[in-house]
Figure 1 (cartoon, rainbow, N blue to C red):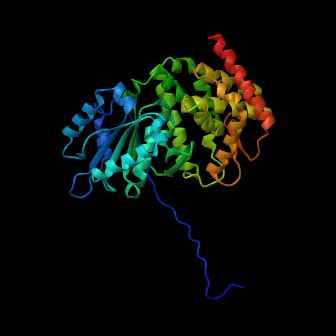
Figure 2: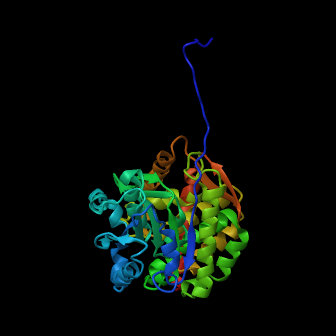
Length: 391
């Protein structure tokens, strides 16, 4: 019997969000109104805007800071550019040093940014993650506009609602969920991307198509060599559809902040997230994901009825895209399998890993047969070794 002086109240509520995705060809040129229209006025004062650029992008496109300043000068009646354009380390290095995060916060404070100011970040996925995390915790959230500069970020993480940095040699150990104010996938920002990094992004496109869209996988499969050769009339559409499939899952899948057990968009990621620190981040995220997707696809064929001929198609598609499926770290299976426990901790609760039953069909499993997973790893390594020998 409940005492009269005790009570319990469980009140369900929802918070509306708006996700703004824009596609442009030249965001600081003919398409500059797209970015300008995302910067909304707030009262009589002009909104304050701070730009952050990935150092790799700044080096590859040295004209970019001048173009940003010209954009700000042209539209000085609409917003105020605060201080210098900030350059930050690129790649995983920006996420591996917690002091870089502190520097970002100091710069945002020095610029007097408030919750209706804007941080515009231009860079690869790691820079979007780190600057986005700083913006998410400053004033409990400054409006963030992402301009992803890699195929990986444009196809996947740029439209996500997560921000993070690495800590304790664990991927994304500290972070937040925060919906970006806007995302602009601009084609001109991909022009200076090295071939290796250009190819990386399509591992996530393969992943999401395997989970959700058999026809899209078939399109990627058929055009893999054209994508590898950077034929943008083909690659552009694959990036667009991958972004939309990821965005559809985030906004319509019922679990944008990953509160449930399953995290299907992380298919192949339990090993990918472990391979990156194991290789001291020599492996790009997209390269690690390609290996992880290959491993879990083969495991799905060994254990969960995924057709073996389709598993072969997946491995061939990934290698046709120019992605390697082998690395010496795959021989270190004991630390690699530690990735399963780290993956469980990152989700919380019991281990839940997404596997495939067919292209476009998935199941969630809570136990891994390590002997069969070892066989899957060896199968992928053997395939990758043969593919490299054939080049």
